[in-house]
Amino acid sequence: MSSPLSVVILAAGQGKRMKSDLPKVLQPLAGHALLSHVLDTAKSLGADAIHVVYGHGGDLVRERLSKEPVNWVLQAEQLGTGHAVAQAMPHIPDDHRVLILYGDVPLIRKTSLEQLLERCDQKSLGLLTVMLSDPTGYGRVVRDGAGNVVRIVEQKDANTKERAINEGNTGLMAMPAASLRKWLAALKNDNAQGEYYLTDVIVMAVRDGMKIGAVVAGTETEVLGVNDKVQLAQLEAALRAERATQLMLQGVTLADPARIDIRGNVTVGRDVFIDVNAVLVGNVHLGDRVRIGPNNYLKDCRIDADTEIHPNCVIDRANIGPRNSIGPFARLRPDAVLHEDVHIGNFVEVKKSELGAGSKANHLTYLGDATVGRKVNVGAGTVTVNYDGVNKHRTEIGDGAFIGSGSMLVAPVKIGANANTGAGSTITRDAPDSKLTLARARQVTIEGWKRPEKKT
Ligand code: UD1
Ligand code: CA
Image (cartoon, rainbow, N blue to C red):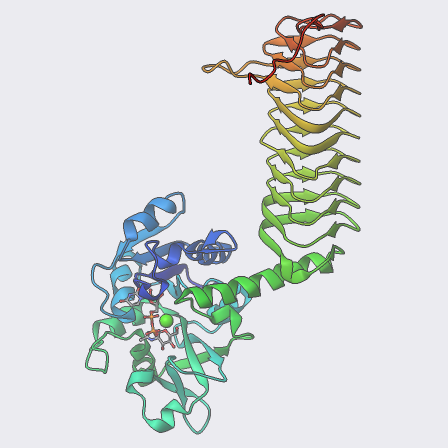
């Protein structure tokens, strides 16, 4: 059985090049903080403890991620990566393996880390490296004639020959805690940057007769660190492409895989079609043959089979049944529940309301805090007047009702089954079943009236 695992995530760097008031590790990638991506991967490894070394702006980082099961370790002064890891060591028992991750390397794959951990035991250290066409800025991995890793030299300390090495240090490594503790205590900062380099533990390990188990990363993307907004956008594009590919492999047709953003988990049925500029956030389910038109924002929602979302809709925490037609320009807000064959047209807003099968609100309408029965027709310009300035009230509309255009339904109010309301009515009292209820001034025409004329 392998020994317990402690993960240490380095996240104390300032991220000056972001030119942002938001700490670097809180910058969003696919809608989640960089550090959250790393934490999710660390948690998936089943670590016994996760330590996050934080520094500048750290209070905000702790606050935003306060629900995460991590031990926060302050590094008050940024004296180097070795110094950063040393801050976490008092919390880590000798018999643990220590896996070191970076808070600003968000796309690291679980499988790569598992390979790294396989190389880590009492006699061996796991080191993740990467082959780079341009290794500028990276520490270089120096190997001996037999191909064994012997040390890492930082760019700023490297000579011309060392700078020509294309194998870069990713910074991610795994090793036994007791040895790491010993090596960290022996680090010196007599180098070009005056820092305590974590990378210097490699040469110490070799001196102690340990093997360096180098794992070369499969792709450059997964080990890319984010230092500025340009690199952030590059990783965003990489992640977008990866998630779009996953959807297509599940059978979804995408009008353009470069123009869909998935910021959460999407589950799909068969033959789903998604047009350009869709943004999918949180948990989204799209049933069989669902069609999503251009420019749609879908957040935490369920859309059942054969429903079409026309262009330019905002759908947030709504539950949409089968064979619905939504939009263009519709807004479905939290707790909108639509049964089968419902039509919601342009400039219609639905909040905390249930609409029964076959009901329609096709134009310019607000339905809030309403229970609408089956086969109801809601005319253009209808408003459920649900708010008296202090409290919200409910509107109930029975099956088969016909709400005339421009009706104001002043809640709390009930419209009976198969009732009609006349166009332009302000309904303040319940309207009975199967009758026409009107509430508007009677139309008059003034006989003998003349238009005023201009005085000369
Ligand atoms: C480091 C490695 C280098 C590697 C590169 C990969 C060292 C000495 N060098 O270089 O070999 O190729 O990463 O990107 O380790 N951090 C702290 N506290 C500190 C310093 C850094 O928490 O005092 C954190 C940063 O927030 C960052 C990570 O450690 O997440 C790496 O720091 P960074 O300054 O980017 O390291 P590099 O000099 O680029
Ligand atoms: Ca870096």
